[in-house]
Length: 311
Image (cartoon, rainbow, N blue to C red; front, side, top):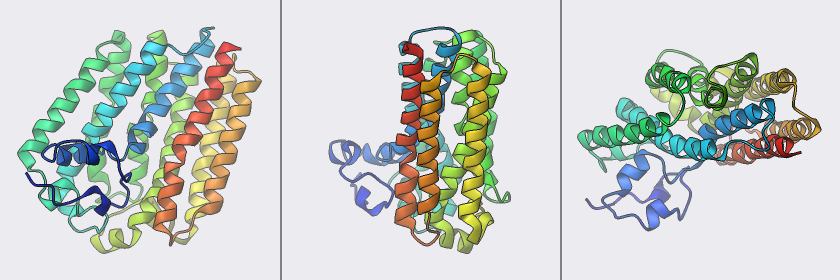
């Protein structure tokens, strides 16, 4: 298959990414289905897993988050984010053809066929399953419990004004997984972290949705960015306030969180405030930059939690 649709035509792709420079041309459409050239997605799926693993290490008196679990979460996040994106593109292939930013995706542009996409989806799910089976029975059951939410999400934008809430329920699931993997159970600490992560996802994905707001109006696609309208800054600020409130509660409930964890949360809060300050409803490129910066915000918080374990 000839690759006539370079990644540079996709405005949210990382320019010069290895998936577009080094992968064989016949493979590139499938890597794009998995959003390999847009790694921010798997980072944002991974970070709540790592937060949860770090909080579990604090609660268990461990000197650091379980490194084996962190590696498994990394592999699983890449695989399942790719599977989720592939599934989303299969469901949304007709809608994507009507939105400027998405019409060059592999399915609506003809770079990949539906049958190949389904096979690729199955392979990615197999990798995710192999990772999940490395954990205890409770964690395995917890992981399977997320599949219904993942399956539901692509349909929500057709009739629900806040589909980002459903995305948050799915993307924040890792906040439960780290704790479940460590203890074979859940606690109020993990649930508070999960609620914080959901609010974080709704906030940053509202920023992301600003890129499509005009096309979404034409296509009839619903989003939190359209729902908040001219008050999008206030809407994101509210989501981030909930994030910080529930995150503070999670640290308090853990009882082992020390000054380093709270200092990290403070820096995380400053980063979120910076994001809100720079939101411009009419600047799609700026919205993408702010959205991507959440990787750094999340890593700051994880580093603080991890160092708190050590000290």
